[in-house]
Each structure stands twice: as C-alpha cells, then as structure tokens.
Image (tube, rainbow, N blue to C red; front, side, top):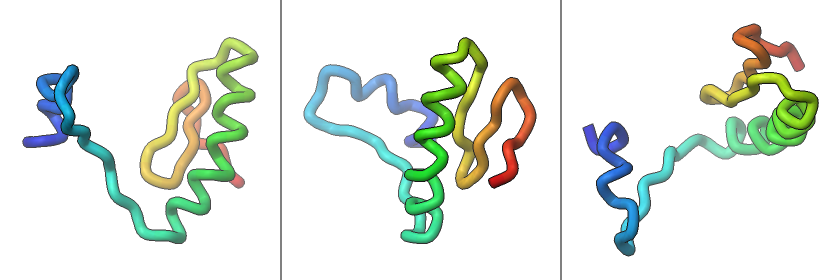
Length: 61
C-alpha cells in the first residue's frame, strides 16, 4: 500500500525505495548499463526485480 502511494511524498523529506538482497542488487547494477543503452537506442526498457525487459521481452544475461 505504501509503495503505491509514493507520489504523495513528493516534496517532503521522505522517500520510498525498494529493498533487494545483495545478489539481486549486483545483478541490477550490471543490467542498468544495458538498460540505459537500450533506452538511448529508443527502445522501451525497464527493470523488474532482477530481469531487464526491452520492448516487453526479457533479456537473458
């Protein structure tokens, strides 16, 4: 419920972040580089947990 209402905290001193285990965080750090490259090429790219999706298709690492 809190994560769904994060926009209400905009402009306040509070922030909401997702918390992941260290293994997932290290994998996400590697995937962020690929995500930024895909976005630079005009593709729709986003991270969900530890999976990168480019144009709706999961990218295998």
